[in-house]
Image (tube, rainbow, N blue to C red; front, side, top):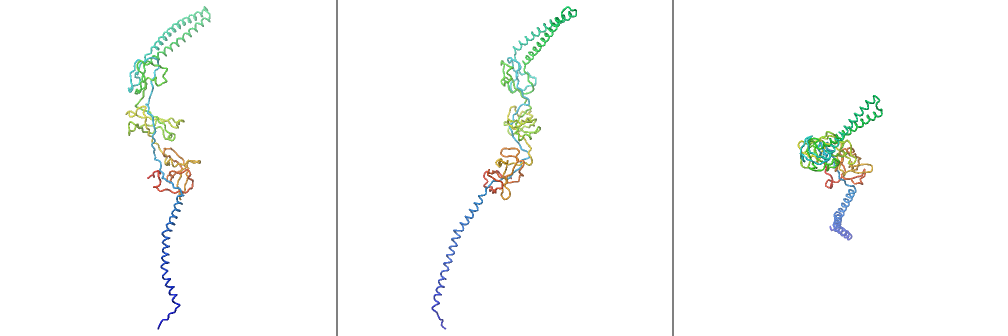
Amino acid sequence: MATETHDGDEPTRRSERGRRRRWPWALALALFAAAVVVIGVLPRLRARTAVNRDTAAMAVPAVSVLRLQRAAPVTEVVLPGSVRGYREAAIFARTNGYLRRWYVDIGARVRKGQLLAEIETPEVDRQLEQARADLATANATRELSRITSERYAGLLKTDSVARQEADNAAGDFAAKSALVQSSQANTRRLEELRSFQKVYAPFDGVITARNTDVGALIDAGASGGAGSQLFFIAQPDRLRVYVNVPESYARAARPGLAVDLTVAEHPGQRSHGTIATTANAIDPATRTLLVQIAVDNRDGALLPGAFAQVHLALQNQSTAVLVPAGALLFRAEGLRVGVVGPNGRVQLRPITIGRDLGATVEVVSGLKGDEALIASPPDSLLDGQTVRIAPRSQQAGAPEQPP
C-alpha cells in the first residue's frame, strides 16, 4: 500500500528542521551570557559587598586595649639621700690671736677632750694683766672706804659727826664694793677668753677638714663664715641619712621602718638603716617630708658627706591597680579612663588615683582590675560610643599584656 504524501507537510518539516538547528546556538549564547555574568559581574558584586563591609567596619574606631594588673603588696621607692655624720661640728676660735700649733690633721681620729690646737693671744694676755691691776686698785679703794665708813659709824654713836657724813661714807663703801665686783667679772671674762687658747675636740670623731696653719691670724669675730673654721669634725661610726620623701609617700615613711642604702663606690652592696624620725610637716617649697635615717656604720662602708640611694619598701593598698599614665583622660568633670564594655560600647569610668609612679599611677577606686582598658584613648572619645578592639598585630606601640 503506497504512502500518500501531501504537499502542505513539506514546510512544516522544514520549520522543525530549522528549529532543531537553532537551539544549540541559543544554548551556546545562554551559556556564554552566563559565563560573562559569572566571570565579570559576580566578582564586581563581591568586591562591592566587601568594600561596603570594610567601609562599615572602618567607620567604627579601632582601639588598643590592655589588661590591668594589681599593684604589688610592697613597692620599692628609690630616692636620693645625703649622708651625714651622726654628730658633726665646725670648730671655731673663741679668742683672737695667732695659731701657735696644731696637733691633728685631716683623717685623724680624735677622742673627746683631745687637744687639737693652741692659739697665741698676746692682746688678751695684756688685757688680763690690766684687768687684774684694776681689780687690785678696786680692792684697795674699797678697803679704804670700808675703814672710813666704819669709823664714821662709830663717831655717829657719840654724835661727833653729822648723820649725813656717815651716810656718805656708807654709800661710798657700797659703790667701791660694786666696782670690785665689776673688776672681778671683767677679770673672769678675760681668763675664760685666755682659756680658749687651747682648742679641744667636743666628741669622738674624725677630723674631716683643717682650715688653718701655724701663724694664721685667728679672728673670733669672723666665726660666721666657713673660711674661719679651724677644724671640722664628724662622727663616722654612726650616720644620719637625710632624704626628702614626696608627699604621696609621706604617710608610709614612719619611724621604725627598715630601709636599705646603696652607694656608687660599692655596687651591689647594701647598707641597712632605720627611719629614726621625720619632720612631721611637709615643706611648702618642695612638697616633701624630711626623713632622718639612722645607720650603723662601724664597718666604714659609708662616708660622711656621700650621696646615697635610699631604698624604701612601702606597703600598698590591696585594692589598688596600676594604670599607664597614657590611659588617663582629663575631663572637665574629673579624671576618667575608657573601658570597652559589652557589645563594644565605651564606658568612661571616674577614678581616684593614689601614688604617681611616673609611667604608671595607682588607681585606688573606680576599677576592679578585670576590665579591658583602652590604652591610648583619643580626646574625642565619648561615653557609649561603639568601638572595635584592634587585633594584637595591629596594636603598634600598645603596652604589653600581662601574662
